[in-house]
Amino acid sequence: MAEPVPTGPCVLLSGGIGGAKLALGLDRLLPRGALTVIANTGDDFRHLGLDISPDLDTLMYTLAGLVNPHTGWGLREESWQFMAALGELGGETWFQLGDRDLATHVERTRRLAAGESLAAITQAFCARLGVTSRLLPMSDARVATRVATDAGLLDFQDYFVRQRAEPVVRGLHYDGAASAPVLPEALAALADPGLTAILIAPSNPWLSIAPLLAMPALRAALAAARAPVVAISPIVGGAAIKGPTAKIMRELGLEVHNAVLARHDQGLIDGLILDRVDAPDVAAIEALGVRAATTATVMRTLEDRIALAAFALRFATTLH
Ligand code: FO1
Image (tube, rainbow, N blue to C red):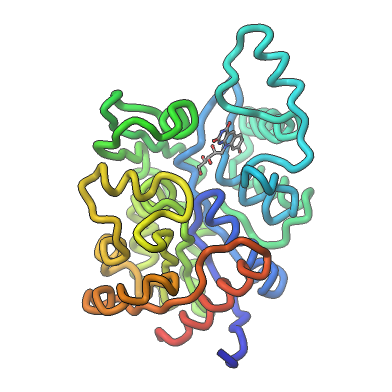
């Protein structure tokens, strides 16, 4: 495609690792400050007395160029003395907190206890780490994803990290989402009349994106937005790029197919971007009234991230 990339303001709804890759592509492609990322906080939890916001931190570290490239979460060049010492004392070590990462959680916990909002703390951390895109939690209020499984009702990180997403999923709950106020800055960003696009990252639709969409005001803001809403599918060739998306879909009795995602978001999204290998899915998606386009969606390099970001913005402008 030869058309120039639209460089106006853009909003990305995102979870952690997969979403952060696209966020980085958009951040590097767009002028400073044009990108607003609204992050899932349904994974947030209190652990070892600390307030931990994994998706916000993954996005923040990624945009700051500090993320661990091997795990996609946590900091690069991390050391693990704290975890080792905690293990020696018989403490809980199933959730890995690196020594440098620990500082983020300790300082966030202190500031929250002193009455600062999660949004203000995130903004302050991002400024210190040189992040120029705007990173917003979806809400300052608590929303907690819980997973109903064959092993009982589990807190998100218990299911995802401690039990490695192995229990069979029967249902999902986003506690607090119905009443948590969406961050006003997020609503303002979505209502910006000059917005080029609202993108939904290729994060896990059930674990990472659904908590955002479970907030009625956020759904209403997407419906009311003048900007086109475009999702990027995390399903490639009938499997998830990464993580348990396909496993969860099967356990919920859903076919692992892009048309299922399009039907799930029907009425909310204007377009869905698929990987080239899924070109045969385009007709079924467009029959649902959702425009579909194909490109390379698997992001291995920084160039892949920027190319997908550019494709998504160009595609969005064709949907007006
Ligand atoms: N994910 C893991 O699979 N194992 C961990 O021990 C782990 C620790 C961790 C610490 C800080 C942080 O910000 C994220 C961390 N993650 C870990 C990732 C994270 O919990 C999940 O990938 C997300 O919640 C899902 O988006």
